[in-house]
Length: 217
Ligand SMILES: [Zn+2]
Ligand SMILES: [Zn+2]
Image (cartoon, rainbow, N blue to C red; front, side):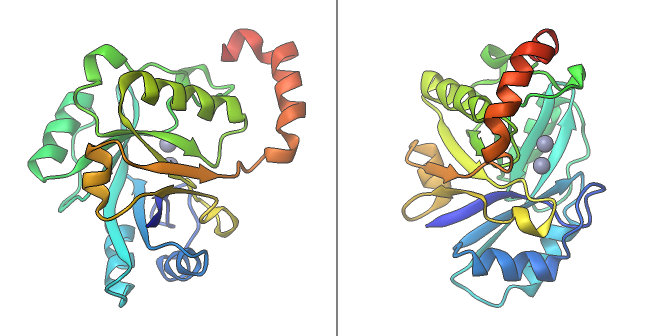
């Protein structure tokens, strides 16, 4: 199975993909399923699910919640998550039978508030996976760090495009056999993709080392 597990529709303030187009393009990219993870709403996900008429294509209803520790991806929701406090979010999701994934844990940003701040020892037993390939990373090394962390914690890794625009869709994905929940639980997923700034990444890396070192490291 090949799923893109991180996508935004125009129900996210920063996204501009209509649910109809997202569903069409993600199928065209050869995916067998998708997680729709808008910021703080499941409206777009519900629309995509309703539009999908193919029983063999799975639409996972989720969202991306900004918590006190950073972003949290949620999957298999029945209703919207109200809390913004990490452990309360976990409780709300688990009550609904959902899953918790930490997206882009090492994203480089010139905004220092977006630095890594998940207290991993405290939260590692609460999470179901770590997003190990996010296609919107500027640096492949940020995905590498996430991959190393998942390996160290012996926890499953996922891949997702984090699509906000139509050209992002399907740029990263998760591969597994059978059922996604089981594959995550037994650490049997794989992931792959291409980063948006791939060809420019070397140049960015060089500049980062020279200019942004204090901000990003
Ligand atoms: Zn995010
Ligand atoms: Zn996102």
